[in-house]
Picture 1: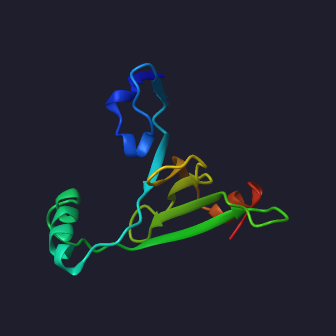
Picture 2: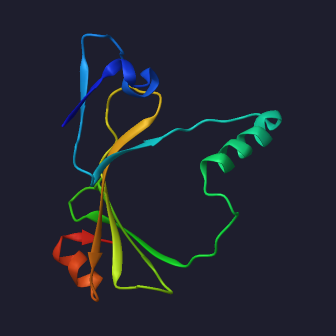
Picture 3: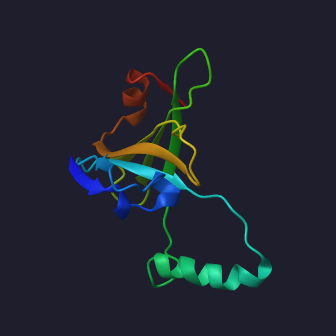
Amino acid sequence: MENISSSQLPQSIYGSTSKETTTKLPSSQYQSTECILYGSITNLEKGQFIERLKGLCDPGGPVAFFEHNMVFKLKTGTDSPVQVQMRRRFKTDNLHWHCRYIAIPETAVKDVIVRKVIDSLIYSNDMMSFVKSLGLRL
């Protein structure tokens, strides 16, 4: 694991930035953190906000794509907060699936919703039987 000083992290996401503490980030490439920020903007700020979003996204405008996306939950007696998403492209390479495990949101009080995600690639010609063997339901 890589040590990062907490003073290098934004306080709004990671909490306190006191100099005595350090935060360990996972060194593995398949696990990451997803942050979701909800909010509202006024109509006066809408144009500037859209320009900022365009700056964060790939240039060149919209690109046509065709995807198949399925969302599964674990088979339990109650509604499971853990999700597994399976996604593939229709037109090309339809045996390769992108699998994303999404954990429950972390309970710490933060300005954004933070939850762990694990991404992996799966090659399968019968994804539904694989998913059922994992104990997932649509």
